[in-house]
Length: 313
Image (tube, rainbow, N blue to C red; front, side, top):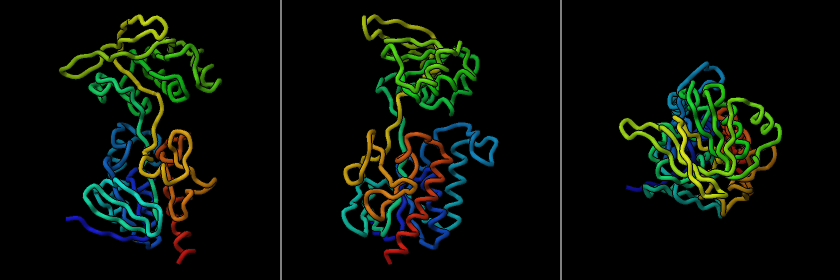
C-alpha cells in the first residue's frame, strides 16, 4: 500500500554524497529521509578495489557503501528502498513520487543521484560488461596486468584512462574516430610519448568478440571512418571512455543546468536555482568525479540545508 511521508530534509540518492548528507542532516536533528534509488550505493557498488578512500589502504567498493549505509542508519537516517520517478519543485513543500506510489513531501531537498558512464550501445558491449568490458580503468585496470587492452574515446577521460592502464597492461590501443584528440594538450603529450600506447586514428569500435562460456573478451572488430574497411585484432579488455551522463532527467527541466545535463550550483555552495533545493556529487561535478569529493559535497549540502531551514522557520 502506498504511503505518504513528510520530512524537513529529503535526500534522493545513496552514493557517498547522499549518505554523507544523511549523516550530517541527522546529526543536526532534522530526521532526514533518504531514498536509495534503483542502484543502492551508486557506482561504487560495481567497483572492485578502492585504494584512494582516506583511512583505507584498500576496500571493496560494495563493502565501503555498506559501511556508509550502516553509518547513516546508526545515526538515525530513515533509509527507504524506493526509486523516485517524479519531482515537483514548483512549490514548497517539494513533492516527490516513488515508483511504489509513495509520496514524499519535504521542506528542503538534497539531490545526490550521481552519474552513469556513457556506452556505445553495441549488443556485444552489453553482453561482455563485467567480463572484459568496463567503463572504469581505475576500478578494473588491475585485472589486466600484462595483457593487451583497448580504450575507446578521444577526450580527457579516454587519455587519462589510457595513461592509467599503462601501469598494468603491456599494450594499450586507443581507438578514436578522428585523427586528433580533444583532450588537454598536456595529456596528449603524455599519451603520445608513452611507448605502451598505440593510437588507432580514424576508427570506431564495431564489435567486441570473445568466448561465451565462460564470458571473456578475445578481440575487437574496428571500422575505418574514412574508408569503411574493417579489421580485427586481439585484446582481452575493452574500456569505454566517452564520458559520463549525470542522472538529472527528473530535474533538468526545473533547475538551471549546463552542457551535459549537470545541475548548476552557486559557487562555493550546493544551492541550486530554486531555494531549498541542493545538489551534490556527480550530479554537479564533471571534473573530479571522486567518491571523496562527492562525500565532501554531501556534507556541504546538508549544512546548506540546515542553514536554509533555520532561516525560513
